[in-house]
Image 1 (cartoon, rainbow, N blue to C red):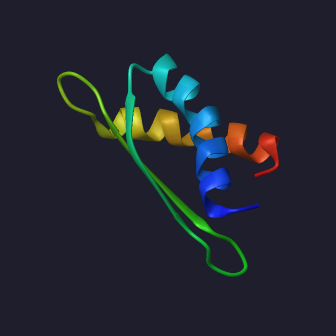
Image 2 (image 1 turned 30 degrees about the vertical axis):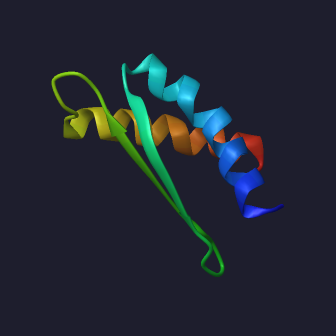
Length: 70
């Protein structure tokens, strides 16, 4: 899968999840490292993002991305 295609697919998956938490996607950063890549998701929301927001979103994003096979 090409990098642009992967990024677009990840975006399709994470944006709805983030929306459930009132978060907006600012940027995705994918680093292909062996044996596993690293995905960083930068988010924002009115009033700022707290650590609790990050914890909840991270847990659900991990589950959803694992289920998607990416």
